[in-house]
Length: 233
Length: 258
Image 1 (tube, rainbow over the protein chains, first blue to last red):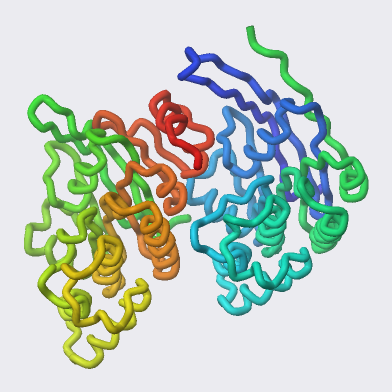
Image 2: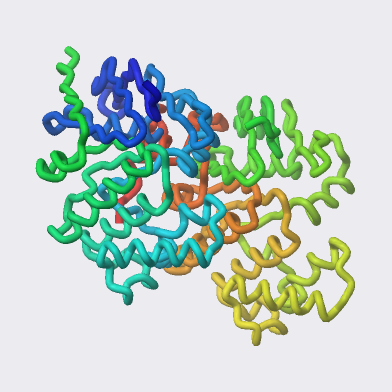
């Protein structure tokens, strides 16, 4: 089988030096393989390590061991778990897209530019990037008058839509979605389901955490159970 | 990823009397990359910046700068005239105190134009026009072009210093606490401006700051300094969200979330 993501043997624990060096193991021997056009939903109780796994796949957390093989748009393969920082930066630009639950706002940068930025980083001309960003924001029903404003003062739902538009702006081969429909109303939830379906149709591999069972059933091809590790003595 | 670093430091050590200012520090910086050096006062971060820029000579270690032709040049062996020439042309400096980077009695336009003349610009009209367009880029009204920076606010002076530094499109810029001492509202504007300009021009930056939020906003990569040692280094968001070293964990957990 050809895959876009093949992760294996992933282990992650956190050592809290400010808490007397307590070590909290979260993942052990975790892995998954995702084909182009396939959506895998991570499931499991809260605290089982679903978000930790997503963060490892994005490079936000460093794995203690294991491999995260990712196929770039040109077909070459990188191990994100072992990649040096500037290669992770390049992978995030061209290969791995990410939608988190929260938008990290940059002071003074308007919503439109927050969304256009991943496109501009890939060399799409500024005006074209802005036009595509505006179209996505309209599709997610963010009022036009908000496009030119920095999202710092937006409501949670509005910020989440800016975040979604930013994540879906560029055609990443691999997309990581952490609760993409949290804090959205029914209309916008439908838009996100459609965006995910379109991303799958163009061949994106998707790994997501979907609390909303209906969303999960409609977008996921497969469910991967993430089981909690027992606390170390 | 076969390109070479623009700046490489190996085994830098320096003592100030009994104080170990730098203890075996090595780092690399690649073209177009923003690297933040964070740490508290006395951690050695500013000393490291001055050693990297060739202003202070280390007791041990080497700093190599790769010039546009691809030749590696030893920053501490090239001699003062050659280093000054580099500082005027291919490098830039943004100081915490704008008075260290500006000529306070010379007009704003003159401050920017002077850097252009240092790299060979001679046509007065063209220099003035380029200076005016850079003032606009850093949000200083064109009408202020003939005013001296001593008449400017702190934030405006800092923006002028940035225009003066970037007008010649240096390949490598050293920044020492560029937002230090400014009001918070002024800091946000300046940070956003630095972020946009650095990305547009694709310049490599080494930024010294004690402001973790500024580092997260600007830097691709982070080095955490303590007692003269680089205790942790890596991708900015990974160092801040998944810190390994006890000191980094303390530093990150001490930041107030607004």
